[in-house]
Image (cartoon, one colour):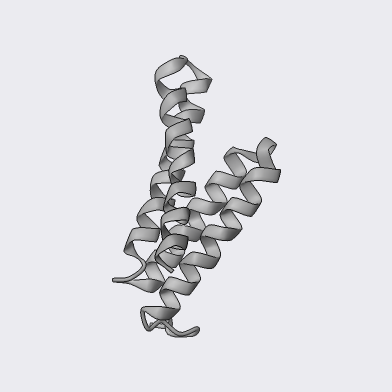
Length: 107
C-alpha cells in the first residue's frame, strides 16, 4: 500500500515539474500554460496528502487536479490517462481505508 502511494505521489509530481520548467523557460502563453499545469499538479498532490484526514475533500481535490492535468496535457493522453487512473485508484483506496464510505459526503 505504501509503495503504491509513493508511486501516486511521484506521478502527481510530474505535472508540477513540467509546469515549473515551462514557467521559467518561456514568456507569454508558454508561461501561463506551465503555471496552470503546475497548479493542477499541486491540487492533485495536495489531495493525495489530505485524503487521510478528510477523505471527501481529498477525493474532490484529486478529481479536480486529475481533470486539470488531463485537459492541460491532452496531447499526451496515452501517458496521462493511465497515470491519472492509477492516482485515482490509490486515492479511492486510501479514502476507503481511512473510514470513508460512499454516500458519506452528504451534509
